Length: 177
Image (cartoon, rainbow, N blue to C red):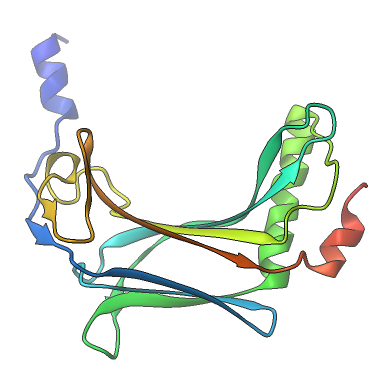
């Protein structure tokens, strides 16, 4: 296969519809040991956004910080009552830290990591969109608006927040400290 044919196969097949996004507001609160993440945006319905929730932990032998991944998924924005689109997601502290424990145990098996101390009580929450590289044209260059971050390699939306939420006690007991 020649270079020309290869380029044709890797280019996006469609040009993508233009989109203007002026609103991309992230809200993160803790209610009774439950993390409530909400996003309000003027992106079109069914645009997929990526949500990540992470803590940091210190590795014993190298002193390097690693991410304790509590949640990582993409989801579509849906119509909300106030005429904007978005989502509201409720995740219990138990659910978040149990998943984080499984991810840590995987890293421990594969890489031989040993945790030095409890993961941080700070949860880093980030939301980015679109989750596909060419949703709004090549490198999303047809995505414009006040909320859009424009870089030479493409256009995207991103918001992040930090919130304090202690590690779930049952998970703490399962760590080998």
